[in-house]
Image 1 (cartoon, rainbow, N blue to C red):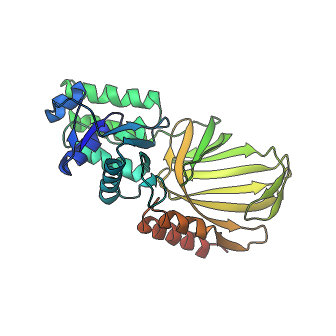
Image 2: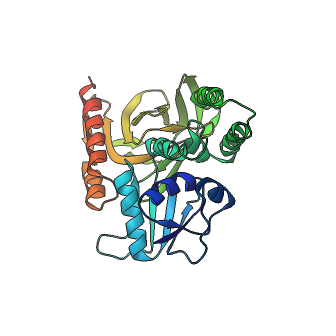
Amino acid sequence: MKLEVRGIYSTALIVLLLDKGFEIINPTRSQIERFGLNSRGDADVNITDSNDRHYIEIKGDPEVVESVTEVLRNSLEDLIILRPMKGEKASMAKVGFPTETKLKLDELRSRVAYTVPWHHYCRAGGETLSSMVSFAEDLVEKGLMDPDEMSKMFDEQVRKMIPRLRAKIKIIHSKLNGKRIRIGPGTVIWRRDESVKIQRRILGCGVYDGLEVEKNPGDYALTEAKKLEWWMKTSYYNISGIPKGSYYNICTPIALYPDHIHYFDLEVDVVVKPNGEAKIIDVEELERAVEEERIKEDLMKKALKIADELLSKQP
């Protein structure tokens, strides 16, 4: 089975796919240097980044697409897999890489090339961060910087890399069905270590789902997010500051970038109503994702465990 692999995850994926018996063809110059590849021809499948860089797209022969997808599913934890329903032939699958999977891909890449900590986390965070990765790794590869010293410095910088105070940032809420929701922008009103609080005004009317409380213009939301946390809390207030309730959104470990937050939503939420009543909602949506093989059962169990823990901590 012949694959052509491109994009920010290509080196790590090639390490894995070669080990599983796939043939990599039409290599780039860096792939030739790292793996000694030289085959040319027509690929059965092409693997590339998605536009937002948090997914890869696997396109081509349906059977090979399925084979590659299953190898990734069995080799990497917490993947998000979007493909036709079971029983249909897939000519394309999208595979999402949450933060912890990106860190595992860093380990794979480091087998064949110097790799800074948080390599794929930063590559997916935008052109500026991606260029920072390239610059740091080039310095080491050219012998201009000690690799251990660079790794230490880079790790320290990324851990301090959170939105600045009063910055306007977006929340990118990626659903398990592939839908991508942009929330905000909101304003960073507090930051410390690897955590931020973001305030945004509510402009529309309606009802807050799960809370069953009326939504009015002038309301505002206060979101608390911490890097690598498995949940994000959003509390709603009316124009006078009176609480309307809170959501704990269960998600894959949060990626906290200078201008946005990204995570994959795991469907299940803990809602706390104004009277203090708390409950878990949308479990059936999470279960459906497992039934449709978009996520593994282990990830569902992790999400439900976190939801139970959060529920138990409510007054």
